[in-house]
Length: 198
Image 1 (cartoon, rainbow, N blue to C red):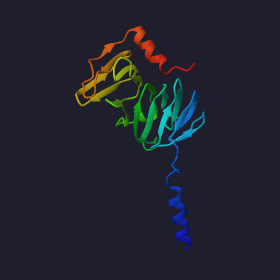
Image 2 (image 1 turned 120 degrees about the vertical axis):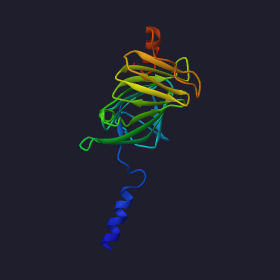
Image 3 (image 1 turned 180 degrees about the horizontal axis):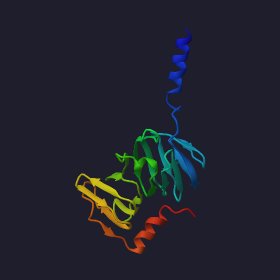
Image 4 (image 1 turned 180 degrees about the vertical axis):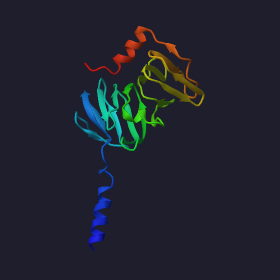
């Protein structure tokens, strides 16, 4: 009987709603939600839940490996997976983002197999220890590298961004990313403003 009770308690502890948080909201300007629940600074972030920022909102999330993700207004995020074990040098992280964001990768992107990926509606971005901005400016997806290296992949092809302030654009669903090119100050400013806190 004791074994049955213990097994039942373990099963309850592993059920929905009892998952370990993968991150924490560290800053919030305006309104944001996780499913139907309102978020605040200090709220835990769990995998599989749809997070959304409201009009004019900004939200910064710190993940368990130190990755910092800032979301602009009207952005949706689903953490499809996020597991990190520094001692065993193992991890896997997949984020789905629709809207403007700024990402500064933490320990997981420094692992040997570079297991951090960001999926957008039109491309997948593979991250190799970096800081970059992504979102819609003039196209469904524009991406600007600030530090490190990333690969932007669509059904039409892939582009590597290797130099700071290099960017690429995806002009339609299925189209290849444009060749890398330096962004002008006006475009860089527009990207930063989309995720800047007041």
